[in-house]
Image (tube, rainbow, N blue to C red):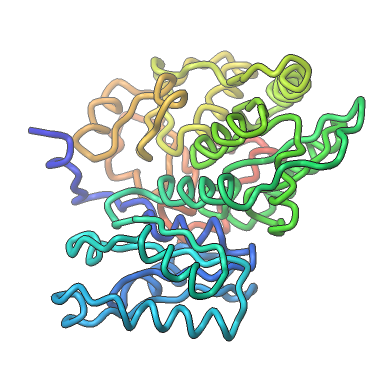
Length: 381
């Protein structure tokens, strides 16, 4: 049986979709995101996947494609509506995201984006999401568009003795809204590191335009890896992967950032985590960083099971298991399982279960219980 035929969930939930990832990545940047769908994706996104919806305005729309438009492949009304709306609200950019319906009728997002950009003069991105991937892919592709089209060639001279970084992969789907994004910035600044831009939580498009002037990219979730590669190709910026969980790992991470700024070499701070009786299920870089903290500070051997489509170099350090059938074998010999509470039904009775809620998996259900692991340790009792 192939991998694609097993991607079903009868017990656990699913991760937020790729279209939600696009909207989340671009939410605070002053652009207009339009999800091409009949009527379901936007309500799912704003109800379950977007914790900023009720406190912060953003231009996230839906095309409301009709049955006849889908059958006939008619995009003219959608394109016309986008052009009219853009001429009214003047967004900084326009992003088009898809759902299963445009995938089935073969919508050409790149061509539509070119048509809209020519009509409006506004940078327009066509991102062919289809609901078949997790939020990681959607966030990643949105950041790729920013790295290719928005980031400008730096004109200022880099100050001597100061390490300037971009933080890539910072969205509420991985970091929620409990303050961990602010703790990350505070810890780095306390170690003398200057933040050029944050992609894309708590920042502006103006700062992201200046990302090419940074010395290093700090990748804090898998969704930032592709943008890091593009920024390296365009500007020679090296990347460092990891999160400052625990004092020892914080020192190692800050040292890696300083070293990368000096020699231009990429670095992956957390060690591979493929064997051990402690099992962590979750997003790759966060899970690897937690595994590294447990290894450094408690001497534990940890296995990371990644359910969010990891790619290299993350995939080389974790076990990829995206559905129930693939995850279950890795839990049978575990003594402790650390995962979102919605994974609990999969965990054998002999295991100690430690809840680690994830906004991109269980949404707002356990939001108040999401720990700030940069400031505090995970509670195991």
